[in-house]
Length: 243
Image (cartoon, rainbow, N blue to C red; front, top):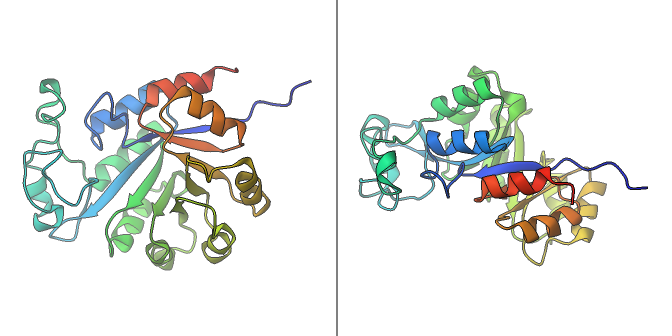
């Protein structure tokens, strides 16, 4: 007799970036409509100390702007087009501000993985999460343990998750920061053994990036609790199938 089917959380990586411009409200909405229960997105600081949703340090790749994100104020960033590069029907899409995404998440029930891309944005981010009263639905992630601990300094209950390429220092990370989960690259280091080790330490593993059905089946078989994917609709469909 087979055991119960383990639920796997699907995180849309920057939303649904194969269907809409990454890190925009259109992309997040499409991920939600595809069945993703969570969305991963990136946060950067503006010139005037606000926080917007953006991945790259520079604006050039995904907007009609030029230069660094932190060289412009929030109002100046909101004047840019963040959708036309992807396709004409997305022309006029704006860079989202943090509050816009938090409000949307509160309304839809979508969980958020907010990756801290810049230093010294932790206080602003934690304060806005608390203002929207969705602390239980938001996890802050980062490659920097220092930044995650800084966030905890503003709220000891804030949920955090380190991003790892390998599990070599897994125990150290777990003992030092007591994360909600660990984000582990879906490459050779993601073995059933490392997932089991994490679970024994009381921490689930979320795999990134998982962009094909064969890879999804592989990491699912290794016991991960969730996956982050660019192919949101594809992986949500695979998750719904039992085989």
